[in-house]
Image (cartoon, rainbow, N blue to C red; front, top):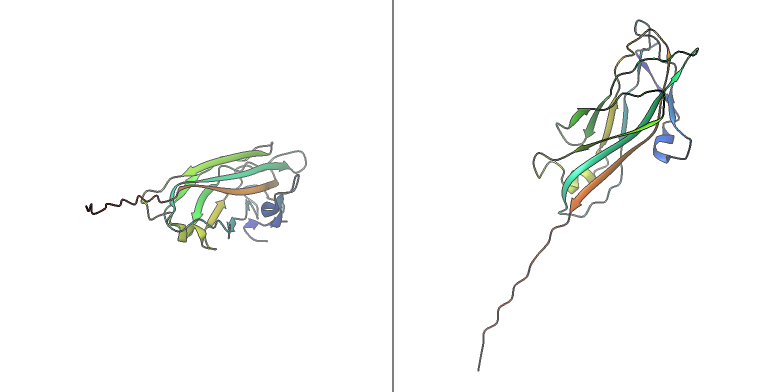
Length: 168
């Protein structure tokens, strides 16, 4: 049934408890169904950036791996990592392997208005991880233990200059 193998225990990605993770239902071989992991979207990070903050970068970290079925592993290539709530920010991540591995990538704004504090503070801002179809005939599982966002920003600085009217 269905093209996508859905994840169980998705809340574990948010909670990030040691040893906890979300895991797909069985991902089947490339010519069977479901043969790809479901897309994962994480939003509502509650960043609370100050008004007027100038965002210099958004770092996305995620930790994932593959698990075997009948001692054989699926082959899931690199996912596409996209920012939600801001247009046009999407790149290839790194493919999962047999070891739980943390991957990271950094987005830098092309225009100063792309990553406004209002956009990043929105409950709709987040990360989408879109995995491709299994590339081999082996079935197996994909696990994700966390998705994190780190925002680097500068706060506005102001200079006040006073002059006086000299009197005698």
